[in-house]
Amino acid sequence: MALQPTDISPDLVSRAIQDPELASLLAEERRRKVGTSLVSWCQEALAPQGMAPARHHRFICSRLEALERGDRARGDPDRLMILAPPGSAKSTYASVMFPPWYLRRRPRSAIIAASHTGELAEDFGRRVRNTVQENMDVLGYSLAEDSQAAGKWNTDRGGEYRTFGVGKAIAGRRADLCIIDDPVSGREAAESQNDRDRVWRWYTGDVYNRLKPGGRILLIMTRWHEDDLGGRLLQEMDSGGDQWEVIRLPALAEPEPGRPDPLGRRAGEALWPEWEDAEALDRKRRVSGDREWTSQFQQRPAPVDGILFRSEHLRIVPDVPSGDTVEEECRAWDLAATEQVGTRDPDWTVGVRIARLSSGRYLVRDVVRLRGGPQDVEAAILDTATDDGPDVRISLPQDPGQAGKAQVAYLVGRLAGYIVRSSTESGSKSTRAMPVASQSEVGNLLILDRHWTRTLVAEMETFPSGSKDDQVDALSRAFSDVVRTSSAEAMIAHLRGEITRSQEERSSPSRPVPGDASPSQSLVRVYRETAASLRRAEVVCMRCRQVVGASRVEDGVSVWHTECF
Image (tube, rainbow, N blue to C red; front, side, top):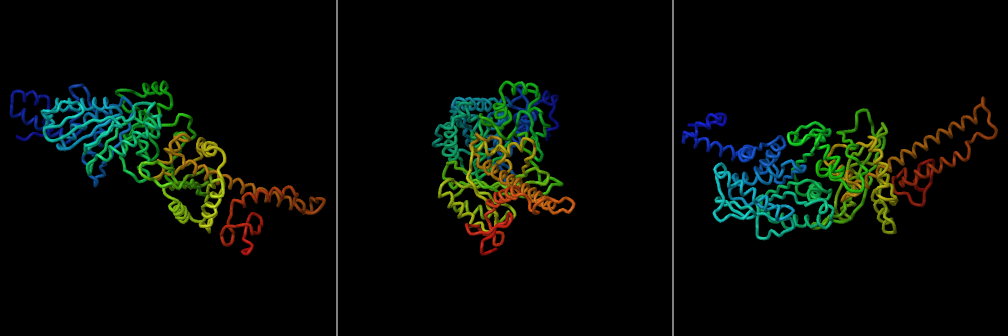
């Protein structure tokens, strides 16, 4: 007798009580569904508690199934990060329901589960163990006879489950699946640099090294800080490290152009309205304050001492807006020369390319970002200049002292054929960023939607107190360059016009002016000073495009080597 899933009904279940053969078929069908569908397993195990998966739980289950499946051809991840607000039952499905199902699918697997304290980890272990005991008939396995401890038990089919507190040694254990749930204990720990470093050392030096070949990692957390474990893993991913599938589920949906909500929600729609609607969440927002709301509930951690770039002001666009043209461009660099060694977290060398558009707005067109030694930095600057072309100006920071001057002089010499400007930094990083932040606030700063966009936006959203500020520093310099150039050129054009008008008025027969036909000396002086200001920045010869030194001749706003004139 064959039984199809659609045949199962309450009436059939009632008949099975009197029919052993039918009861056996129903039990087999239940085991089959549980073994092939994580959602079915959750429905089966949670029904006695009056619980059922909501929309976001089903979505999480679909990605957990992909993690277990591990089919690279289908795009399945081996690193999965679930970021969701408190009270969303993310741990119920990912830390409690998923392990029994994983051991059903992979009977001889070893699971390591960790939380910010050993006590919390054991609590999860107890819930997982009890779930297995209560559902042995549908799971098809049971606990080993000598397994009683909440944080250390085996199955009768060779599976293992062990728990650890974050920071505790995991020596002697190996894992096919590592689950890290809630690695941050609270705000105090999140604000402690020592605590954040301790968690990172534990992850990189202990947890990661316990994975078996092909092992999977599942991280479930609420974001607390821009530099928490999730934040550092995202940074490492952007620099070529482990690639994670990231499920970010804000309490209230925040869809953006090209980045729809994972659940298809409209802006402002609650994550789990059956449990907590938008009105209840807004009440929490008012009580908790903006910082706790954006980090814990929206999964966008922000620094405590102010934000210059607000998320709602950052405009992401697919390309240069229709009807706009690029007027001028600059690539500015923020230089670092420290290679990444081990688990250190050095600064980045960053080059940000920004354009001034015909509409008067500004567009971030590209970001180059690397860690490396001086030779790597030099190669990146030269290669990027080649890709950008000679029409894109280059702006370099000059460190104080003779060494800084020598470095810039060397780089400028290597960039023959390009317009290169250099200057020392003045004022605080926040002060330098304020002009471009102001343009962002009024909607005049656009950012292309590219592979580097998320990293740039994440840094802007946490500036000036985020763990990194290299991209914002380069952005500030690039913006300053295009604004200064456009202002100076506009002034020069205006002064040229004024001089021409003055000459015409003085030479007009209908309006005789005493004296010669020359413009006022003060007007000419202002013109020359403005032109000289712009000329000093453009330190290349107009003929050979090489660096101009002390020997030069000038004409208007142009500069030549003496021998090239």
